[in-house]
Every structure is written in C-alpha cells, then in structure tokens.
Image (cartoon, rainbow, N blue to C red; front, side):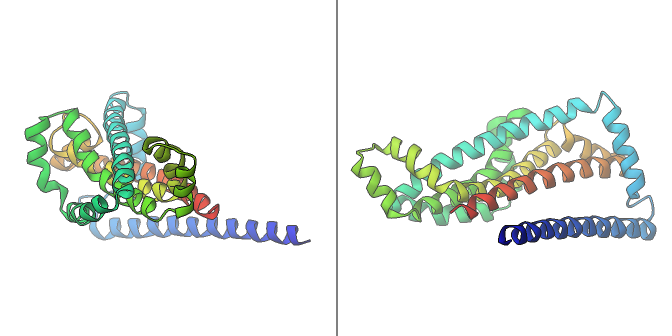
Length: 258
C-alpha cells in the first residue's frame, strides 16, 4: 500500500513538472508573439517565422558546416575546461595552503568580463579555431576548479584516513578516493562550466571566425536578417536548455545518493 502511494506521488510530481514546463513554454511564446506585435518584423520576428526559418536552415546543406564548426570548437573547449578544472581542483583542494591562496585569485578572475581578455587571446592564439577553443576554455574552467576544490576540501576525513591505511599514493588517492567522493559537486560545477564554455565559444566566433553559429549571428546582425538571427539563437537555446536539463537531472540523482 505504501509503495503504491509513493508511486502515485511520484507520478503526480512528474505530471506537475510536465505541466509547469508546458506553461512556461506557452508563456514564453505568448510574450514573444506580443513583442512581435508591438515592435514588428523590423525588430523581432514572430515565433512562426522563426521556426519556418530554422526549418529552412536545417534543410540547407550549407548550414551544417557552421554547426559542425561550433560543435568542434565547443567540444574541445569543454574537454579542456573539464579536465583542466578537475586536475587543478583536486590539486588545490588536496593542498589546503595552495587552495586558500588560489581561491580569491580564481574568484577575481571569474568576475572579470572575459571579453577584456580577447586581445590577449588573439595575440597568443591568432585567428581561427585555436582562439575560439581558448576563449571557451577560460570561460568554463574556473567554475569547475572552484567546485572541485571545495568538494575535495569538504571530503569526509575517514576517506583520507582509509587511503593512508591502504598506503595509497597521491595519484591513486586522487583517482580512487577523491574523484568518486566528489562527483556530485563536480557535476554541479560542470553544469555551470558547460553554459559558460558555450557562451565563450560563441563570443569567440563573433569576433574572429569565418564559419560557425556565432559567425552566422554576427553576419545576420550586419545584414539585419532578424529571422535568421532568431532562428540560430533558438537552436542554441534549445540545445543549451536540453543539455542543462539532463545535467541537472544527473546532479539531483547524484546528490540524492549521498
């Protein structure tokens, strides 16, 4: 009986969450359409026109090389941000003095508008893929470092005592003890790093690229092609929202297991 009640409650919660999601989507579409009526096609295309333009883009073979360019740059930047953030976070979290010194520096760097660093990025990496990857990486790596570092700091002391009792070395302790115990917090940092890495990659494409979704956005702005601009923005919004939602589900499940 209790099991049936729990299943019914879980189903009701899922139904409520789905209804809330639908209501949010309807509200966004209603506000979007209202803004279109107020401002007209010159300022903002209607939802219908945007979807029609997005359908045209997806059916155009010339569009997909731009998608692949952005995905390739974003994937590399995300890989570097995650791996670099994990390594730095574990090292700084495991060495308390280094972490205490590095944390205010990381927070200060995190608060700096990264666009101010773009001339330096161009100076070191030049134009093209390298600059986009570097710009995306510096956006996403700091949250991963901070979350990982704090997770390692707050790890239960019994885990470290057990590792010492088993005579594990620093690398083995980090790989077999610290990382598994800190996965939930790492995923939380990864969720934030994911969004910021995507943002950084797109900003890099706005200023120094001849291909990619960011390049399409800036070219649409120059040509005042509002439907294309909104269609690309909608595609990015859907991709980022779905991925963030999946990461949020993973994050909640991992935290429930603690």
